[in-house]
Length: 154
Image (cartoon, rainbow, N blue to C red; front, side):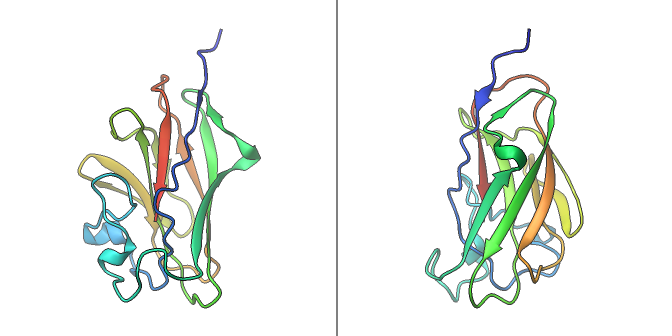
């Protein structure tokens, strides 16, 4: 019998949109800007705008409306940035165990994204700015249940 599934707590703690992005992603420059505990946000370098002050937003959605994970399964995550005047979009995303904010699961890079490891945390982020603000990434759940998980994105 499968272990009890745990409900994702999709923590869009920081829904700031990166309007003018690093050409190689913030992690390439050693920046942790997902909005997770201990991380900054995009305003660390894009300080000309106050956090969440514009019309832009970023969202994270799991294909098929998944709200529970099965240990070891891989899921497609859609990251979408929107903003009426944005010419370029970028993002950084991390998955953390809710109980202690430790890294959980594994991301796999896809077109326009890269995986970076900073301070023992596995981030996925844009590798080149996007004109459309849309990315699909893969996340593999941990091999055993770890309880609730939050995804932080900026």
